[in-house]
Structure formats: C-alpha cells, structure tokens
Image 1: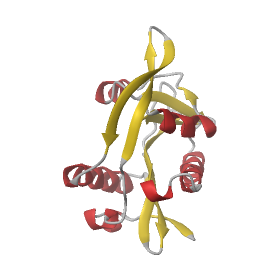
Image 2: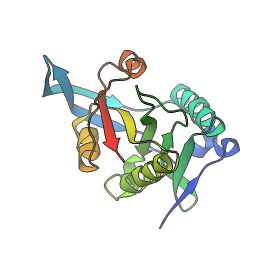
Image 3: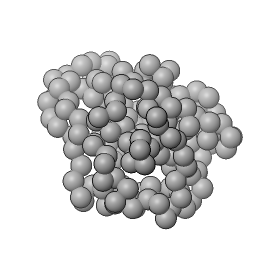
Length: 176
C-alpha cells in the first residue's frame, strides 16, 4: 500500500531519500530539430549521487517554504516517489505553476505512483488558481510517454530559464 502526503520543510532531508532509487537507463530521447520532434539515440544512465541529493533537498525545502507543494509517496514508511509544484505563477498571463519535479523510485515505476503524484500536482495547481502546469521534462522516450499519457502537450510558451538550464528537456504544459 502506498501512502501519499504533503511534506513539511523539516521532513525533507538527505536521509529521506535513503530508499529512493533514481537510476534510469536511457537509450532514446525525444528532441526538437528544425521545428520537428524526432527520436534520437542518446544512451546514458541517469543516476544521482550525494551531491545531486543535496541540491535536490535544498530545492524541495525552498519550494515547501515559499508557498509551493512537495508531496511524497511512501511504501512501508520509505519514500518511493515525490512531486513538487512551485507556488509562484509564471507565463505571460501568470497562467502556469511549475511542476518542478516528479520522480518515482526505479523499483515502483509502472505501478501507478507517478499518476497519483501527477494528480496531487494537478489538484494543488487548480486550488492555487493556475490554468496550466508547466513541465520542463527529461527527454527520455519513457519519460515523454508518461507525460503524454497524462495529457501533456508541447508548451505554448517556453520558459527561457528552463530552456537555458536544460536545453535538451521537452517544454510541456498540462491544461487544468
């Protein structure tokens, strides 16, 4: 059984991620070239070490302290997934709230945890007056398949900060 709950800033520490497996083996990525989406071979392993978890913890604590939401998925008291939504609107009409992260531990992918976390993000954004979620999404084909299955499409407006930070990400939106 999976328990979903909002996390307070004090709960978000490196030890929270002790049972979380970020590892993702990527073979193909979705990229935009000359105005068209293509699938490109780009094999690599995406994994996080202690330095990446330290950065993640700082970001999630900041989100929780500045009006955003961090929700965790727990199995037997261990974190197995999380989602975060920033609390500050963005976009030309302040239509977006940024879904800044959503990750499911490798051992629970494909079990519906991501869908539940996405639903929590959707609910938070609606309750806070957003019209859309903005997602700067990893370009791995599997990651893109998840977002498309949730109803996400290419963003009408690209956030230049996200594009500069992660130029290979796919800029998506989800209409609430």
